[in-house]
Length: 406
Ligand code: SAJ
Image (tube, helix red, strand yellow):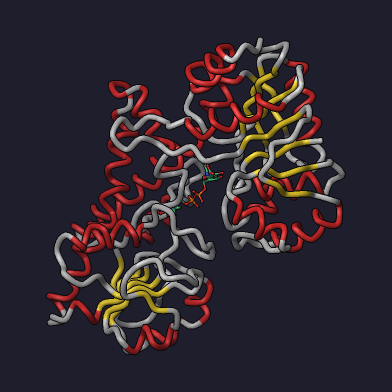
């Protein structure tokens, strides 16, 4: 039996996927409300294919509880925030979950950490804690790091089709865990050391962050000199060895704007490019505010209360708004304006910010300048509704007249 600890964005789909592929799975989370929602037969976030997977896993016997289980394999997928001042990973949830596991696990259990951690986290925080608790690593407990790689918006597909990395001290343990993931994963599964697995995960997200920062910087250069950044990137990407990502209003979510800081925090004098790239991405919500002010001046618009932000989530077609560019922008503008800008997002049903709308038509009736922060399918399908508005399109999806880009 596998005990999946932490039933959030990664733990839940992983538990469901394993359960629906013949593995006996119990999911544990200390959040009672989350566990009772799952036990009431409801998923806790929206994701293509998740509800169907949930039903298959329930039929296969998956269970959810707040109790840690006595079993021989644990998968820990709890959040790893970063300390905003030191920029270092905060491994408190990982260490806390492991401490709970060690209270119940039998001798010889394997503990797989899926949470993203910076290189050296297991050496620095996990091993000393395990040993101080009287466990011998490699005998009483086997440590493995198997970082997840699935992308929100396509998680269920990617769980099955992505390649994976398994980091283990002992190759035989790595192979055992590989066989477990191979129950559902059709991608290639590489077995390596723990530190290499830690590093590869952070490097993958850092690569993406730096590439996006490059695109964002190009957007600023092109704006400065009247060039079309999208056309330039499109043409450059026709080169067989160039693949530039897309500029946007900022970088959100819980991975790309966070993980590269782990490297900057741990290697401050060696991360010039990464550190500067992160600053470029962080500057984008403020840059969008400057664009709004510029457009208002150019169009003779004076009423800020007639400006509305379309989209609150960190990217299209997900309901996750953690660290979203819209939230970053609102935080930035609160310093200058008494009243926050109007916001609408079809994916966010609860009230998260002031001046939030839950109906597209009502939102559009109250604004003259629409800032497209997120390219949800809803908007792409109803783009005509923006006709007659002034549009600032930070996602390059609107082809109506009177549209400005980044
Ligand atoms: N973004 C841009 N321009 C782009 C691509 C993205 O501005 O060309 C923005 C998005 O709008 C969003 C942010 O970047 O605000 C992050 O979105 P994302 O789609 O790039 O990435 P995540 O955070 O949803 O998922 C990433 C993925 N990592 C990589 O592709 C290397 C995913 O595979 C990881 O599993 C995930 O992080 C994670 O959990 O670490």
